[in-house]
Length: 229
Image 1 (cartoon, rainbow, N blue to C red):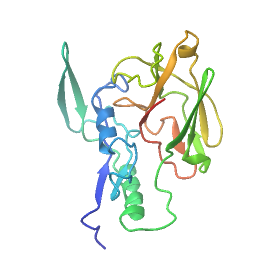
Image 2: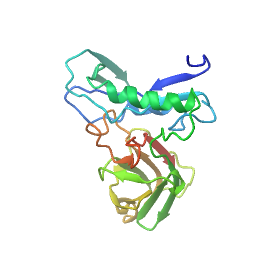
Image 3: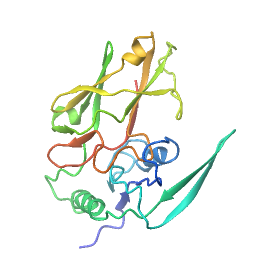
């Protein structure tokens, strides 16, 4: 059986920065987000016939196979990244992509082919609770890190968080079977207002299969996301 021509498949970008695992939030995070039409997941309303393999948790920072330089120019600075494009682990990427293809392209029912997606955000004092999959699917928390919050003293609810500055780390303080709670004291303790949250917003957001959020039953990672609050 062949995949229908209207079906599109994406292997979500793996970032391989030589000798550097998590130092930059430029370039690749925005590319991953754009791949999904700014939803963070597929299929969605804009990309109904698209499936993908989330692979940002499968880095191979020391792969000896293939690399090239990316030059990113901004107003005052030029950044040069050395990017490795041939990670040695192909099997995990392929198995995730095949699972998504079976569900979306071939229409197999009952397949749990996506990692956890955030569906509810609630701020309570110095805590931000994030619920995944409407609370219907259990998650596994493998790390307390990976989340960042945008904090401002502006009272304007339409305040737009910058893409590369103004963000601070917010670790997981606790979690339940389907939600996590972030400690946002760094913002609220100084009279700030939280206006955004993002997850895995780095070229290499974690070590191999050790990002923060996974589906407990399918071992699939939550994709990167950002949300205005």
